[in-house]
Image (cartoon, rainbow, N blue to C red; front, side, top):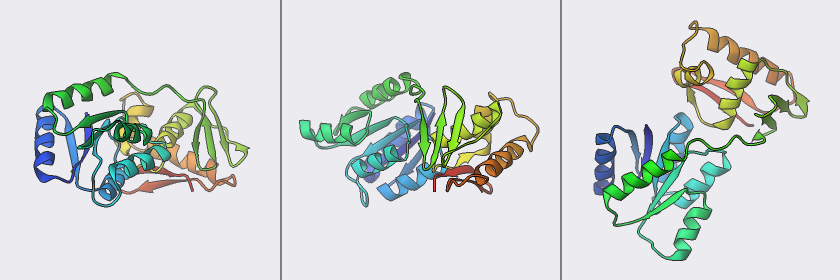
Length: 222
């Protein structure tokens, strides 16, 4: 499980990172809101543990921004504030759960497991990324008002990128999703990405499918 930990207090950050690592998690730790937003653009996470009081954008601001981008990763928010209004603000920002400091690490683990047990979100009727609309239930893709015909495999690749619009998705992660963990010939994914890119560019869409050399692919809504 990949966890993004966003905590500016060194002792708290070290304690949580150590505990999660011992539980078998791969933890990426950052100290402020700007770094948190940057981290989510270069990697996909299974869980985000997010402190409210941060340098730069607050945890509330970070959570709102992630949700506005369409990032559905579960967020466990940490805060020293314990009023009802604070809890409401945290949940209204898009957090999935709220843990008040000081807390027992066992409770943090229990809440983490509960969030992960919820499983992936239900497939929405439509995924919107800029002027690109994808309908998972019908396999329809509309780019700036123009219907784009895609093969089932092309659709699977684009749908996954659109669900994580603005995030760089690693080559292997995209392979695992589109080919159920079975790796095809080394250049097959590149071929599919190139086909999708050409089809989008034939429309008036501002969305662009970019390659990040050495990192993966990202759908930029435009």
